[in-house]
Length: 273
Image 1 (cartoon, rainbow, N blue to C red):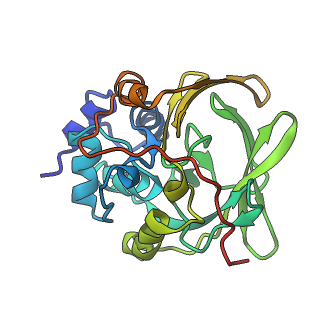
Image 2: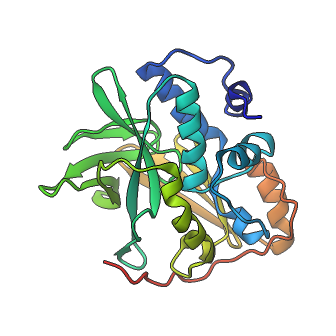
């Protein structure tokens, strides 16, 4: 049975609070500080099924990582149980390696109307926002995870961007057309099998830290420090294969049951615009 109190305990909170911007910010931030974003299931023989009860069991009871559909799918339920009225949106991630946007339903995000404004929530994206941000064209702000801004075109496409070493980098684009959680099932399967998916090509998990991020990928452990104004300082260490389970346990609190096969292969550009 899905239990909101157990979720709150999982993310380091003790009590449910009435809907407010402060409470929403707290939920969003604590989720990111507590639940790793990653692809470990795909590389340890587990099938990811877009079912909120299964996702709850994996993330809350088994204290595992999840990719965007899992983290934001669980957060969708959390917000609903907490008295909010979240809306599901579809985004397409810009791949800085292949220089191509992902297909439709490539990424799931949420919007919440609160205190007279709409807020973008996303607890399922590495290097993303730490707190909800106002869905307002031209918004710009600094979080502990970086400096972000929202842009909007005349065609009503929105772009979330992050500043990196003085330059703006597109993270993803989206529209405000409302979607359903189950609309992402086909892409959930795609992400687990496609050579154009980072989740298929690379075994990784990543978690937000105060002013930083810890990331495991393939045979590497990457420590990122965020500096004021959007700067980053990264330190990378190589891992022997027998070190990886210990790193996952000690750095991310994750213990895998199935046979884990580390992977870090190039991503093939998808055949879409």
